[in-house]
Image 1: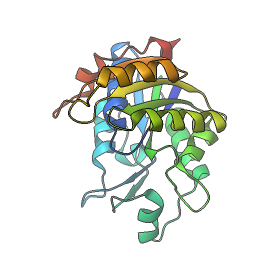
Image 2: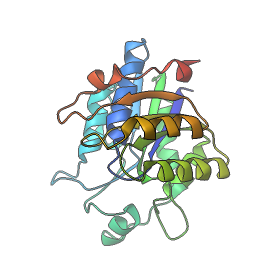
Image 3: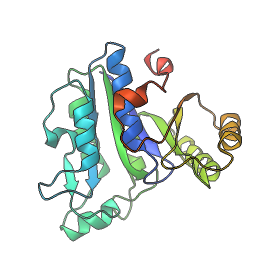
Length: 224
């Protein structure tokens, strides 16, 4: 089975897709075959496709159909369980995990599973996106959005991941907008308090490509 990582964030809009695409590009640069899955995406165009999922699809080396990359595409750009209710659907962690396994068992050497929102985003009345990672028993990569409140959000998310019995294997400091005040001081605090290696500090670029952002990441720890 491939090396597979679950990418979560400290919140929505912190750059999970930016970092996921960069991880794929870095792995491809290391000579690995890559693939990605965004098992559920809320917020799709008239074709029923999600922008983040399309970016993942364009960043991988394997030729996967859109439905394999994003098997559950929901129209409304709201929390997944709410978007699913609008369409009369019910999301289940076991089913989403099964859809991910189909890609994990494929030809790729390096697979990224990108969550939706943060660690505790609900997918139904009893389960959250975390339950998908738990079902798959994956190591977690945390994307920390470097903005006001990031230290609290990062530490709470790391604590929740550990309590759920999974390993926080690494984290990335991503700047989702203009550079925050006292960026370096916040970064130093996170380095001291987060119990995982930092893969890199990725900058805010209005127009970005995974290969360009990959230059800021060192993924050796993921390839060991």
